[in-house]
Image 1 (cartoon, rainbow, N blue to C red):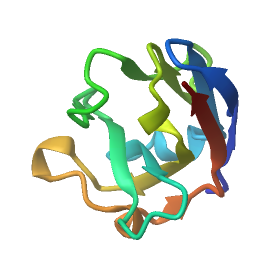
Image 2: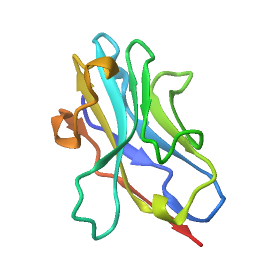
Image 3: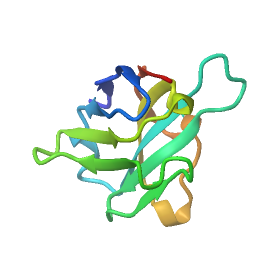
Image 4: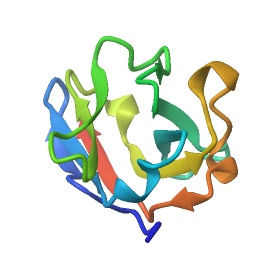
Length: 129
């Protein structure tokens, strides 16, 4: 319980699409929660960037850089969190991490990567020009 495993990363050309998945998220459902995707670019000194967040009230947050291109969702079985990524750009190249936190609401602030109590190990996305 509480272990998150990402999948779906890979290499794609600019303009292409990928869908990332994160399992198993069912442990959050009895609670108020946030489910999030973060990313960290290669050799970056910057902290993990919050890409998209979904809370238990279905409120969402998207980074400006991905609005209109990425969509965060829970799947029908409610066992996985997904990130649909369209119109990918080379600057989207990064390690993508799934994270979950309990007692979180988007309107109270999305926090940072290390404030999430449950974090996956990441899946690499590489976008070539």
